[in-house]
Image (tube, rainbow, N blue to C red; front, top):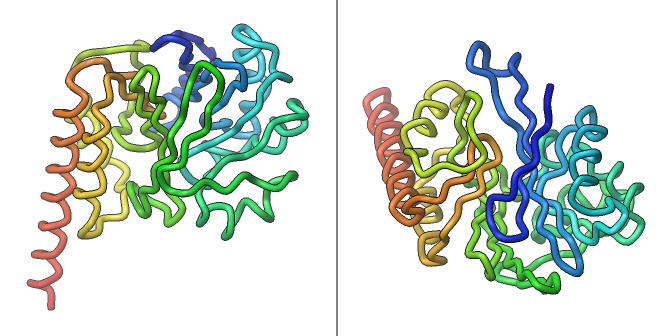
Length: 248
């Protein structure tokens, strides 16, 4: 496995490891995003077994012990499996997450008490500002949430727009079609009536860059991509309703 580091927006670095045996034969990327400021933040920690590679990658940009904040979309191994290893490596670092994630999981799982973020709360990183956004059950997980970096208008998308295969760091090519194909393959999302609306609200942030956890960062028409993804999930939810209505 090779872990690559690319700056996808000013001061935001995509740390990406391609794992060919996941979703073979296409393979799968696992991405973390390092936001550099006076108080650097790492979004996603990666699995515990990827910690040495991700730690080395962070060290290409900053001294890892400088890390001040650790966040992620929801509690899952690929998002936060290495969080306690990072807390040990960065003595001043704090986990930052929404209230549900902290109350249900992180207050017990994390080796240091987490910082509880309210929906819409902003942390000033010094040169960068991140806003926390609750997205419960979207794409999955009651505790799900995202971060928006305001100075670069970069939306850290978590599992939204997940796609299989290896990709370059930054693209303007279609990300909605591959995301729909990945949903067909994995069925990873929690379909529910509010899902499309929850995704569609993200367009109001007017992001310029979408930072995918599994796939490339996207620098095309982000609002159009968000709306199209929401439409796809509305279609899936309606199809699920109709299928179950017929079954009843």
